[in-house]
Length: 550
Image (cartoon, rainbow, N blue to C red; front, side):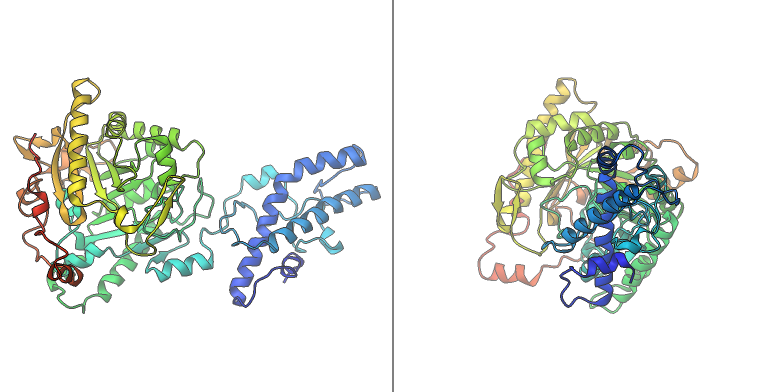
């Protein structure tokens, strides 16, 4: 172990952690110190110049020896004392070691001249001095995930791909493999849920949303600051891991053989698993790789990277999460890292408006938190003019029943989740508000309720341009889209690959968005509650009495 590690090790309260984990934490200690020292270097140089004289070549880093003992003593002070104090502070802190460190060149570990580590500096003997400008021009070398993060994600059944990507099987994929129904995207857009792969090329995110079901096991950052895996490597690895999971389920009870055979051919990719996919610098190439394989792309972003949205090429369907109608509510609910989060959010909506392919606002409904402010939501719609607006009830999937939403309120699990009826009522109110905006000339088109998926508590508003000859065309003609992509670069219009929506997916239909070719299955807990009299109404009764016609 080099002297830098030894210095940190002497004060680090690591307990009985494994050798591998301790080594990793020690490296993180050293990198933390290095990052801080790098920031204070200019101030330290000015201080020493003033105290020791302008002729002192502090931290020259040229490898030459100085004839002035004062210079050597000054360099040692800055290179050893400051670094040692910082190392001591970092090593004895009683809180988790930071896992995201903005270090571009970990070898830049000393402020001063080479060789001074022999005199007690908390720096390895192989450390080199490099100019700050030279360091900044280097590629990122640190990995996104620590061993602890990898372990936490793997325990939640994420299969990691490379150093910053992951894939996981969706519950609706498992359901449709058994013939028990597809997800709301099957109802709204016609995807085959059993042929859908859920992936993220960036486990990191710029938000820490209070309703996120990922339990905050993923890292956070304002920008990309890690080494980057190639897009093709990510796509290939994701498909490989996804098919492994499909194969592992082939023996499940009630599994349909025909569905498993079809599932070997991945046709759709939901880039929304966890983190912020658009943060990945190679997102355009990754989406192109998917399209060349005949795989559609459903990309979700949280609206904090407007430049990435502007530079984004063709996507089958692009989403922006609109989690609150006002700045204060968005800050409380999404907990963004960027101080200019609202300006970034509005700029992202403006960038979305310029896209010709299918665009969507996704609203996650949280009872008592963001289901008011209908007029404010309508104003946000006038900015982005999306093709579709999804309103989906927030649903917890375990991992804790409470979450404090900023400084506003702490809600229990039951209070969090609105019923489908409440979501539908919200959609009707938003539709009416949008109609007023259209009449005022602020919208290009009217919106109407086109579809709903009661089982996900989700409702879809669509622009009336998708109502062709009295028939909704919210579904996607995926074969047509693949043909359009193969023609080469250039914008693709959303209506060019629109397909008719089946009647069972219409809002108000008796099926309530459940595909009649599937077999309805109720969870044993639902059956138990019904037998105990805790469920007084049938599964469709809550839809009756709500006017959905214009």
